[in-house]
Length: 186
Image 1 (cartoon, rainbow, N blue to C red):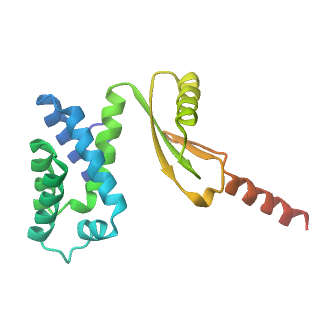
Image 2 (image 1 turned 90 degrees about the vertical axis):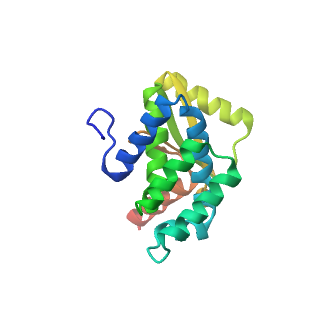
């Protein structure tokens, strides 16, 4: 069950805690995390897969068959496959991205890791990534996990989100603020 200490609630939180406890009992926290990251990436990349997990028009059997195929081709651990099949059987695949994010966040929290969600206009070089990790580590301490997304509409700069705090240094936001300031002058 989700409890007040973890901050996990709702269906996604309950499922995330369940797989976290199972993976911990079987000493498979990292392999399951790897499988779930891969599955989340597949969901985010494929409109068809997002439609499959969200739409009630697909039968339980259709959803289960597709998910089983994806997990088999990716070489997912047996525990991960069985867990996703339970989620599919319970007709909760639409919650799967939330479950995965909750699992990864709770795993990081338990390990004392800090996760920073970074949105960049272009891919970061190795040096930029290392500098970003070091800057976050020096400010917040501890281990730092950086998840980078690319959003070309930012034009330049970064948006860094750590927990509930967000730092937006994107060129897009600066231009929007400038535009608002200019409207106030005229």
